[in-house]
Length: 571
Image 1 (tube, one colour):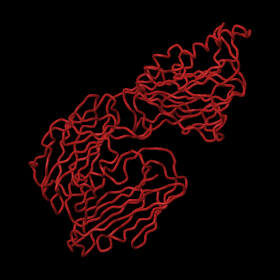
Image 2 (image 1 turned 90 degrees about the vertical axis):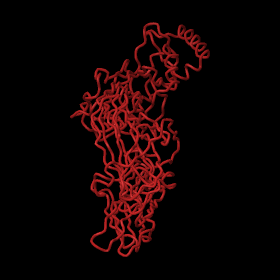
Image 3 (image 1 turned 45 degrees about the vertical axis):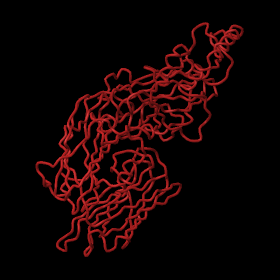
Image 4 (image 1 turned 120 degrees about the horizontal axis):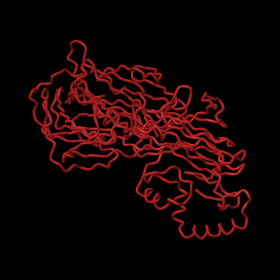
């Protein structure tokens, strides 16, 4: 399912009959439902998060602006990715290969038509069609005249340290032609930022939802009763303090103001999960400089602004070892990857993570995970993807602290090699293949780990009849019809308890540390309890009767737009 997005309402400055009328910009987008990158706040398109391809064929979008005749003049600018054909009252745009991340269809420039009257309105609509995809249509109300609330851009400190606080001294003005009966302030922050005060006239939602590897935003929205008169400027009467948390790294704050209406509240509250603050009320007061200090559209005042921050922090990426078992002809699922031991979460510039996987000798890759590409033994790109000795994998663009990233490879054992060893190396992509240490990683010594197939057992270890394949962090597999996708997991209280309970199960633990997730099979061994103990005793007795001379047998184990007022768009 894809959602077509744009501002919920657009306000145009009335046409004075002299000169060129002021213009408003409307950006029309398409994105997968439940997706979260940088948002246009309050937009009808919902949140955004990065994901994989969802509609391989071309998608066609129909823009209908016939209802705007006599109200607005419309000019269309296609996005770099789209191909648009424009008629007098409509346009048809085509995009190839839609993905879950939000993409721009087109940018519209609107201005009040000559002879239009204040208060006149009409709707702009967009519909979509494409093979194997469904689209939620977009509809935005275009009105001549009305209130127009704009924020002044903040001069915030951008280079921070964990625990640092700074005041957010917001000011806004009504540059429209009518009073606003209330104001709605919307604040979105990425994972590393939080608010010190949780005010009673504000509601808050923590980052969450979406898929692993997605960019989730914390949302806060605050209401202020009006009226707010045209030509007047206002400021916060109490503190609004932004905190760089211990996990902060590359972060963003998006702040937006709009008239407080039921329609706008419904949009910003979409998805629910909000909790009202319990501290004092965040109030407003007239600004000392009552008149707006700049004209709308000059870049310093707008309905929405964004501020970026970089916090001096580190993230310890730990490659995870694995121990695998399989006899000749058997298929093995090997979950290979790394864990982010923090403290920082990762996204943005300088955080691209690459994983270099070397396949154990005697095995052959039957299925390649999404995000991985075949390489020759010395790191050169290889056309044939299956059966390569080496693979370069791209980690998700967003990696939370404590998150584990796994790439599930399906292998077949072609020949027996005792202790066949491959490796996993995590870091920045290096020229000529492989990886190099990342600047933010404080312990590059743990960036490499080995995965061992058929590790020789100590003399006297029990053997068993040839059966299922033991795989660290996975389960026996059959050839996959499609390439498996990369998997990410996050630590939970239950997995921590399981780690403590299962320390002595066997060597098939995939490098767990600090209570992070174990394989599903290991959890099964823990919960099986007495049954496993009884089975183990029987296996030892059988092994003593059938032990092979070499000491081990075949083992069987398991595992910016703007508001309604003139020249603004309101989301």
